[in-house]
Length: 267
Image (cartoon, rainbow, N blue to C red):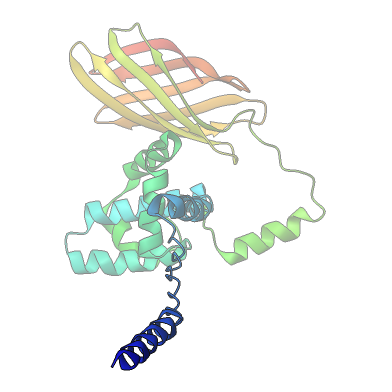
């Protein structure tokens, strides 16, 4: 009996040694998720988009825009039928290298330029219903230079051997105020073009009554200004000298049935 108990104890002890020698299963290492690459934010992408837009906007030609904008403005002012107005404007846009969308984009960039506003305002003095209707076929407004391929070809051919064309001492928009003659808040604005044409307007109040008179004329090769205009019985004659610093001279005429003669300085 005692012998049997001893054998049982030995067997149990051996079994314990066997079980204690078993290895525990190795723990699997935790896996980590790789971070996905971050998408560029709107703020980071914006500079590239803005740069592309600025590059596109920089390509707008001011002269071509002025021609197109005047004709579109004239059509909007004179053509009452929306369908007909749209039809004419669809002829105008490609004439100057625009689509309706690119013209609208150019308008956001150019419309507030003083030289552009004055050029369009001055040309609008000649805008009539007949002119607006004719723009469906015309290459450019009456009295303005066409921008056709034939003119460009002729100019390029002549430029091969011809000397450089003379230019006015200063071109572009100029403005200034003037007083005397019973005027109040009076000003002159003028635009001198490379072809020596000059146009503009004087406006203000005289004895409490407003006036605005457009004028047009020429600048000679030696800088002498000669221009005149009339509206509603009011008249103006502009003379003077154009230099690299601006224009100065005399304004004469009649406003509200009273003559005047004052000096001006525009730059």
